[in-house]
Amino acid sequence: MGARHFRWLWLATGVIASPANAQSDASALALEPTSEWVLDYATERCSFYRTYGEGQDALTLRIDSFGSATGFRFMVMGPAVPNFELPTGEMTVRFTPDTEDRKTQGLNGKAGDQPAVSFSANFLPYEDPKVYERISRREQMAYDARPKQPQPEFERQVRSIQMRFENGRTLRLNLGRMATPLAAMRDCLANLQASWGLDPAVLQSLTRLAVPKLSTVRRVQRDYPTSVLRTGTNAFVPVRVMVDAQGQTTSCVIQIEPVEEDFAEAVCSNLARGYEPALDSEGKPVASLYRTSVFYLIN
Image (cartoon, rainbow, N blue to C red):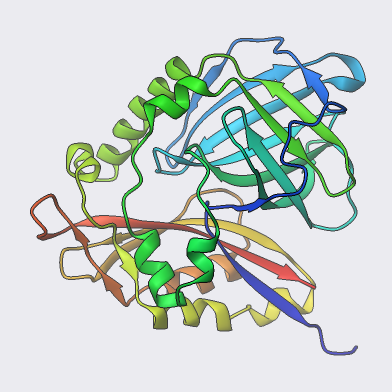
């Protein structure tokens, strides 16, 4: 067997804007909700979901948070979602107030026997991607360590989400008013953070999030477990690392099940050291957490 080439993606919830197709797509399949929002509590995530359309146009939208009040993992699943052979594909996302489309990476697969696509997006106003083009990787990490607070005015303006997939199919879902479901999500998150031994009020007032050193990121980037590399296995691994006030890790938790043991061990062993601690409202180091998702992909 010839050598396998692989690539590893460190997924952030930020997205890149695309000037092309910046207007709302008039050819999009526009779907109305067929259920109310349903909130789902779990030990490592808070989620809410809603069904849309009927028959071949039916789908379910699920929005997960693994600890962030603004960064979410979206999933659409059902007959209206395209089937893709490749595990990932480029796609764009657009919220109602956006003046640009946001490029992101879709993870393609199945939810039960239905096609499904998931992607990350911030529920925040559009941010110019040129910010990242002008700074180094180290500066990018410091930039990402700035706490991102909910933006009520943006949330009040959101009425829909539009997704354009790599095959050109476009779906637009009527979200309706988001204030109530997002408030319920954030109440859930506060309970979740407390269950992890953290003070939600302190987390909300941080002036800097816990951030890994560049050497920590590079350890993860260099390591694709050999056993799963041989079998051509891919993985999406959301992870929570608890970091104390000295920048030392005290625990590492994989936030979904099931995940191949070799992937879980690789992620946690490589993220086990090398952090700048979070800073409170007075600039003092405090215990907090570092959250990310590691995405393993075979080319």
